[in-house]
Every structure is written in structure tokens, then in C-alpha cells.
Length: 307
Image 1 (tube, rainbow, N blue to C red):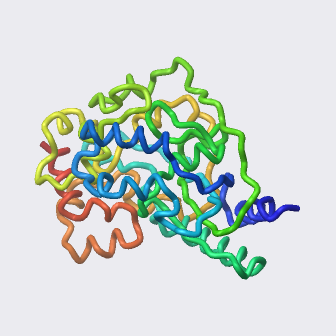
Image 2: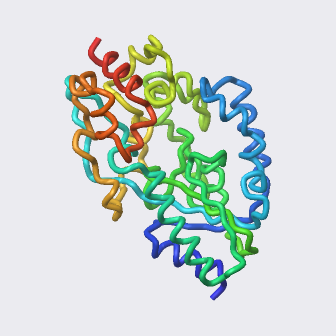
């Protein structure tokens, strides 16, 4: 078997659900769309996205010897549901368990170590969301899924409930060349369901209107009035556009136990959140993606839900 086939088999052994390999070529078309999105100001306060455009487009800006990109997807769906309880705030499904950055990174490091044992000359760079890479673009190029109208990658097997990671390698590998057809068709459920009209047109999300952006990335002392009026009970993030997607009706539970919800991480008691001290916050959210919003952000969001 080719090294590419062996690597893909090993990635599945490490626990990833999907894997593809593509050449480490410039993302020119995707980069143009990113530049248009930035020019419209859709990134809001996420200024780092505008600073690192060249790095997002060219894999060699991230890892100069890059010749191939191993792209992986990891299912994170667990069979639990939010409760509509005004005393609590809903938390986005991706943040229920342990921080996905750590879980995906650990698996990719193990994969890279395995590759180095067989190819001593191999060098690699691991990217999991934090680095300036276009994760969704690589996933689409690798044939793992297609970009949905809500701008999330949709896989036929797991819907959009997947985390994406990349391993840039200095090796020439046989690439996957078959792209997955866009199966969204005429469906507009995600666009119609968004309470803040953040999906301004198919495949385009204006972050400044997005509940997820406002409750996680925005550092303002109060939520914007239009967000607060339509926040729909969300304390951290928002899953509305994914919850209504027909491709998310057939999801299967992940085998990764670390994505099982922590106590209070499906719906969080708003009074508990507002009463958190920095010390208790640090303990409760250690190793959780929810630390992204910081204590001040979580408490701001909790206040907004009680007003």
C-alpha cells in the first residue's frame, strides 16, 4: 500500500472519523472569498483574521516545507438535548465536553509520531483552529464534505457535528482528488431559522449579527441590543443553524468519551454563572473551550438572559 493509504488508515486508528490528503497548494479562490468577507467587515472585532490573510492562503507561510496536507474530521455529537429553562442558559454542543483543541491535537501528534517512525525524514506542523489556517477550505478540498449554506462543513455521515484539523507534511503523498458535491440544494432552513439574520446570503455569515460571535468573541461590556433581543436563551455560542439542518438528523454518537457533557455544560444555571469567582471559574472551566469567553463574557451573557 502507498504511504498515503497507510497514513489514512492510521488516522482512522487514532480515532478520527474521516481523513483525506491534498497537495499543499495555495487556497487562491478561497482566499479571494475571505478577502471579500473581510472587506464587508463581517469579521467584527476578530482583527487577527485580517492580519493573517496571507498565512491562511499559503500553507508554506505556516510550514515552509509543506508538500501535503492530511485533513481529519472528528465527530463530536453526543445524544443529549438542551432544555428550554429560563433559569439556565444554553451552551453550544461543541463546548459540552473537553476542549476539542486538546483532543484533536493529541490525536494528530500521535499520528505524526507514527509517521516519523516509518519515515525518519518526515517533518510536520499540526493545526487545530488556533493557527491561521482555513480549516473548512482544507476539509472541502480533501473531500470530507461540502460547505453548507450556514458556512459549516457538512459531512454525509456526521452532518456538521465535526471538528477539523490539519497535519502539514514535508512529504509528497498521493492526493485525494474527488470533491464532494454540494447537497444543500434549494434548502434554506438554516437561513430562515437564524433569529438575527446573520446568514446574509447562502454561504455568507456576518459575524457581527451572529449569536455565537457575540457570546464568545465580542469583548463589549454588554451584548448589542439586536443580539440581546433575539439571543433565544443562548449563554455561550449557538447551534440553531445546525439544529435545523436536515443532514444533522442522522448523526451517530461519537466514540470519543471526552466529548460527553461536563456537569452544567448543556444548560448552565444563570445564577451560578453570575456568582462565579475567578478562582471557581478557573477550576470549573479548566480544559474547556468555554474559557474562550472569559469570566467577564460569561457573566455579561448571563445578565443579558435575566433581563
